[in-house]
Amino acid sequence: MNIKNITKLLKAYFYENWQNDLIFGFVIVMAISLFSMLISPFDAGVGNIAAVILMIYYPCRLFSKLHNSSSRMHYLMIPASNAEKVVTGMFLANIYYVLGVMLFLSIGILLGYGINKIFNPDIEATPNLFKYVFFSSSLSILEFYTWIAFTFFAAIYFRKSPFWKLLLTGFLILIVFITVMAATVWLNAKSVLPAGSLYRNYIKTESYVLTGSDWLPYVFCCIAIVYCYAMSFLRMKETEV
Amino acid sequence: MIKLENVQFGYNANQPLFNGVDWQLESGHLYGLLGRNGAGKTTLLKIMTGLLFPHAGNAIINGQPACKRSSQQLCDVYFLQEEIYVPHLKIKQFEAAFAPFYPNFSHEQFLEYLRDLEMDNMHGFIDKFSHGQKKKVMIAFALATNVPLLIMDEPTNGLDIPSKSIFRKILASYADEQKTVIISTHQVRDLHSLIDAVSILDNGRMILNATNDVITDKLLFDVDNQKSQDGNVFYTEETPRGIYQVKENLNHIDSALDLELLFNAAIQNKKEFTELFK
Image (cartoon, rainbow over the protein chains, first blue to last red):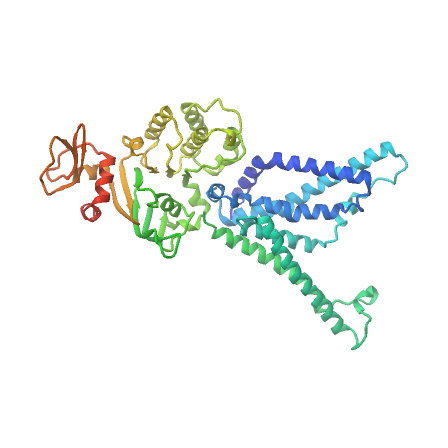
């Protein structure tokens, strides 16, 4: 793995995409400021909107070159190894896009607030950006990055209609995930509670003790992330034109 | 430098395209890869560059399997495809984005080639150019990379007549001892004066792979008023200008290589040619 090659790949990405990223950022700013003017950012589900953009739109777009024969040839012939290409994609999906969307969301919220303030001087104090942008999503950070990893893999794996196949596969994975979560809750209740009790111990935060089954979703997420990126690398390695 | 050993490949399991292709290429030559439609020329080039994986056998570049597609290996190869893809970039941006991947890329040469191909005053996005213009930009870029192995698939398709002769001129000055150029084409007349080695692919095998000198040493390209009665004639073609013939050059007489005649003679005499050029 050569850092110089990763830098070159990033540079090539920025040359090709900076305008698109900026335009999309502008759309986010406009949409969020409009939402923020009409309803509070938290109620507008800003975090969820951001999460969907980051989990589906960007990773799907990231490997769009692999979805067409001539662009796939161009991409595969760029002098960087398969691992370097995957790592560059991981950087973009997990860091660059996340920070970029957060930045544009913050600008959108502040802009909306500023405009609102002009017309309605009595509105609440400056919005808590930290709360709205980072913590208004219903997903945990680990779940969020698991979904990114999953979409990332799907974007490399599916050549035709990646978006729809991704949704279908996502739906199936969701069912598996929910099943695992349900099993975790069931196991947890069974291991901690006295037989026959309907009161579940883990809800009482003061007496909450992590058991093996509490870690299961976290372990599942971590395994899923590693698995998705490892599979993405293998898929990239065996990609032909 | 580049070696294909017993390469077997097919898009369908029941229809193999290659039944053990062997092909060895030496540095410092400009190879013309010829073959009929559907012979698998483009497929072979893709296998050679690691874009397709052989079902059996090996494609080796600089001692490494091509399918590894390592960064070092890709630095040494530029594959100009027939159906070119260009990103939404201007010429300068394209150069800034992709030239750093090629350590021997020459900005001066790139400008010079663009100037020769009359593309130096184009300021728009490359993907908005005509097919021929896109091709010229990509040809200029490919040549400026100065990679040891340059592969061009039908490079003159889409070029106008003046551009074809400029392309030939540029390519003639490009070749040197360290570089290998492979040009796959149907349009043999475009390459006639250019290539110094010929490879002919037919029915899943490489039936000829030799330099022009070796070919003209073993074959005589002759034009006469009547058909030769010798048993050593491989191919004859009657034209208003006379009867063109390809014969075995038993007396080592010098003659000018005619690619079309050679190609027709080779596909009609596969066994004999394979033996002759062993």
